[in-house]
Length: 310
Image (cartoon, rainbow, N blue to C red; front, top):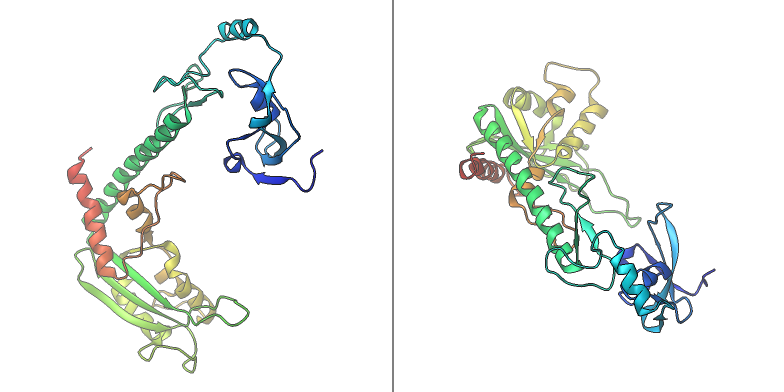
């Protein structure tokens, strides 16, 4: 059993290069055995359970295994596939290689992937992430082109006014929201600030009008249009306010006015395609801030279909 004083790691990615499990030492091209006490432990996915705890030994304290050179040569000759030779750069590694198959390629049990060294594996995973991003970029461009072809497409930017948190740190609900909307060419359709709290609420913008009073105008200008917001959740404060205050449905839309919208942010993330080398995920783009800037991004994304007609 490991001591409570041992350093503990969560996941293989946190384990330093010089710390190895007993199995990892024995799997080296020239096997070794622990030569010192357990130095740390790691909790990570294992061969039996999703979360297992493994003892870690210092590689610098290890000793050669009892296997002779002739035995190691015979074991190498019996290998059915090169587990220590990188298929890309030809490196002859000490530790077994990871077999990599791009996610953009179909799975074939007969071809489990190419063995790659750590450097080539990092590059291959980044290239695979770029290929997936290119596929997502094409889909985003097709979506944007369809939105531009629809004359009812409306870009809606919602900016919430949220009071500072109290000493307890509890996040407060929005007290107002500015609703900006424009068509795909950037022409303004709506620019109004609506109150989501009582008129005496501290910090309420001076130009805020009750949402109930603004709903007829919003329904007239936005009710039948195809709305595109930055995130689908941008309309949540408006939906929640209507749900709390509306006594019964009326001719001005109620919840239906803020019920559905397409999200622009994930399409912008795919179009920009900025991949974090550490996580291999696309970077979250900044909110453009205004509806006309959202329309500009929509047009830029749609232009991708002209650059890549496929």
